[in-house]
Length: 485
Image (tube, rainbow, N blue to C red):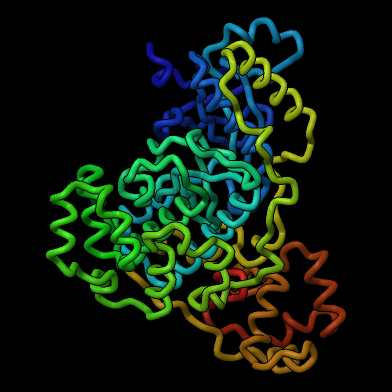
């Protein structure tokens, strides 16, 4: 019987294992962690040769470093029997051929969403793009390049719409203080999301390859299908050249590097502007897309710059768009060492990981969670991926809030709407239905912060007594993302 058919091949520590995906960097299973009684994702890393060991060591190092709301969380690392590593396992580990990364499990990904729904409504495009860029800003500040940004590696919580970047199996540590010329491979990233410099087999690139891929994802959310669906690398380059503008200098430098037929086709055809691929597109969306898909990587917009673009102004909140305070450096990159040496370092990383209590899969980051609400009760009626995948329905906006004018005045805000958005960002309100009288009541979540704010500004109980909700489903865009009441 195959391991995939045996749901308990890592038992008794992990049970009910199911294969949920495979990829270039390893198979992924879902399982129940007996210790926590939670369903988790388990990514298998092969350790059968030097290349596999280098990739595994790099992925563990990167995931240990990256702590961010929009990046998948690593809970622990276990061996082929589902056991945590112990000092006594050092000798046995030299014979190990695999290990498992235990990560949080999200129930969907952007690829599945797009397959089910097609193109997304623009408010969801903005919400997902903002979170993707917010995560990439942090990744790049850690001197890490993901190198495989695509919809299937962008995980989404179906209830909260929280997005996390996953699968760092192809990531690299690029220290800007050193040259990596000749030490990088172009054979990474999926074809449809591969930047021009990678298609040209360049061994010199940086985080801008992720921004190109993110631009392709952005376009795919707007179109409902991939932007450039090349059959092979030459075809992919021709599709790009047909839509992306080059300066005369860029074309002069590119021409000798591409096949003569491709160059001739580009010279004879004016192509079709990028905007022509979209029936209706916001002018700001197109401007951002063009900047993300600039042919020259030196002119391509960065994640930090993209977050400040006018298209995302309603989400932009720089003080809640953190960077990594302890980035990885050249000494953290995995060199060309023997397999046994690499395995011993993998074991050291696992030991240090187990002793670090900061990596708790149950921890919740408060800032983003304040506006992307967890659905605790099945009676709550909030928009989720299940709603997105149905026929589009315009959000019902709150048209009356008696507190907004007061909030705007007391906090020195310019408009009533800013007062509404400030309240939404300050605390979340979950609407439930009282089983006895079917009246709507309010539950304040994370009451430590909201209650202090509420009591100090309005007095205890004021919100519940004075705010009149007339809608069953209330949604609007706050400064951090979609806000639900």
